[in-house]
Length: 126
Image: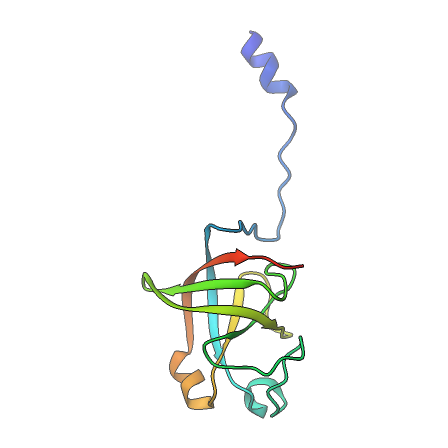
């Protein structure tokens, strides 16, 4: 009877619609390719939201409520590390566990397409 009473005293769990991200652990994200062309982002300069110049193999766009801008992340595809990236950009269509990975040209962004990747946030800013 004491165990039952103790269970009744436990606080109710809060259920959030927002995905939970744990720093230093692996989280699943959908990763899209994008470039600095008008088709991908309605502009053709390489200036990111954080006022850096977008670079392939470095720049990603994120939902800053999930991955803070300035954070360093590892991205794995099919169990292989594909790179260490910086959260330097945002986008209107990026919500939740979604990342846009920057490519220098449109054909490379299209070749990447959309892939499910494992992401580890190793240095969270913000």
